[in-house]
Image 1 (cartoon, one colour):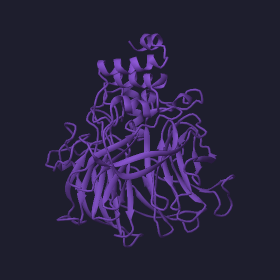
Image 2 (tube, helix red, strand yellow):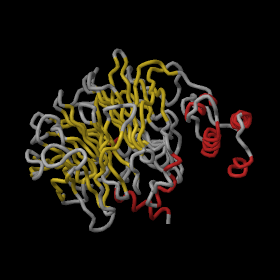
Image 3 (spheres, helix red, strand yellow):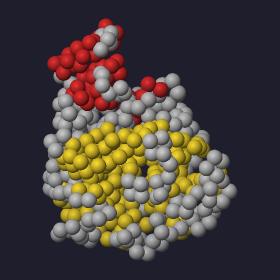
Image 4 (cartoon, one colour):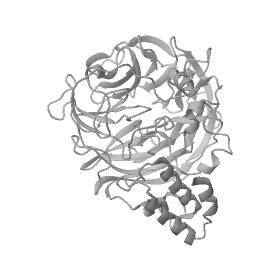
Length: 505
């Protein structure tokens, strides 16, 4: 039953798609995970909104260029899309929801460069479900922030749109109508947002999962996660109506993942770029076993180029460990941005059970994880409001479970979408992060921060049961001795231990 639901889930490609068989090859290893004292990269929460939280979970969260709004998608439920007012970063607030039918899901949402428009994708949850993308007018013409209107619904020919990218300077969008044996990247003219016009498609045969446009260098970075081609592709997009392949990294020619801290090449999930240096950062997503990590490619920084990318660095997430069947996607990397901070360059990732995590990639040959933020806010409300998993594979999910982050340069903040606990805003800093003690990390997770409390004790039992390292402690695990210390402190604070001991021992 479990295996059957897993196959069905992966067939839909909700969190990831099954990758094809990989061959052997060589790669250059970079810094490992979590070895970090005094590593640049700290992150502090500014604000949080649990949102309306209908049945289902949240997906990608995108930020408008001016940083005033974010939009989030919904998954396996009736969530649809959620517009979030970010005018006060310490108090993000949902201002509308456009529901969807539970026959489809919205894995991706993106703003149009024109104010008052955003896109949301549609993939079918059931046979006959809707497949394509929709255009939402929330102030461009017919709609408003409070009363948005769906002004176009576009049906695509294959399996529906999993991801979509807008061109930052022209009336074009590039929806990915995923297919393992056809190109799948479509081009639509959206000059009239109420009538998108199909123009063409491009790319190698294979399931392209994600693409990003580097407008300054006129390049598209694309990640292919499965099908006939798996790997990383660079396109020349100087003519946005006719992108041309420049180079590719074929994962079939490189080794699979075998151990934590060592690079492997499977399930290429996201391809992005450093906005100031000639570097690309490519992430893999693997749901079981050794998780996927982040690769750094030289595309002009030293000896590499867009025509001949050179692999120079790699890291897993800070607390990465092998994922059991009941820990789907827990420690794999997901959606990231690269953020220049003066003399320091940081990578920020929305890493599922890692929460939001930061790595110092100032030296791209040695990317090093720094601080993470576990997104536990309002987790006690998940059940009572009817949110959470609605397919069997997701039953084991619990916070943190961050789907994505986006950095907004205009207002210098990070926006994160946690699939279970909603919308977050963060301040990112190049200040050095130094590991905490287990007690310090437990105390800072819940308010008030000067005590362990019942919530902190519950979290300590959770870390103990997961046999996982406690975040931000330099990979210290919740041992018997550490748990006993937390129990003692909680009991001194007045927490009754008997109910916890009965539940967890």
